[in-house]
Image (cartoon, rainbow, N blue to C red):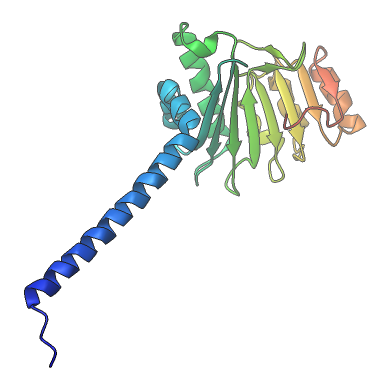
Length: 228
């Protein structure tokens, strides 16, 4: 005749099993956390070093969400990527650009002012610009040269109209692809524009209009540079 197992013994065994399960779960969480921190240490470090600048971008745009950041001190590059929210527009993106320019101007000793390429990529949605890159890359003189401010705009814009960018009047380089030239006269407000490129090429009529409005602007009509 088998003897009954004491109730206390069963309870102790259940406690031990529970403790083992909790320890196993904690171990998995620890390993996953360690893996995340190791694999994203560059991103975390970049976010920390540029935290004030990134805060200014978020504040000014009101809708952009940061998804990645990277700093290469050897190559002197800073790249970050945002995704647009429901209120994402060309104007909110321009507000972010202007916030960066203001921050750099007010913080002359900030390390990005020391010859760093600054590139901000914004992935949009159906509520705003589809895809854009804002940078200080100077395409007019040399693609490796830099502007003092974020004066270069690249647009991959399937659903965009050029008129949406009427407030980007101080940019110096404009590269566009698949964007609707709904009102070419908007470019007359871009008085500092010195380089413009359209991947699909400008029509002869649009090319002539740009030459009349911006006689010193270099016009390039082939997909040589987009998405570098």
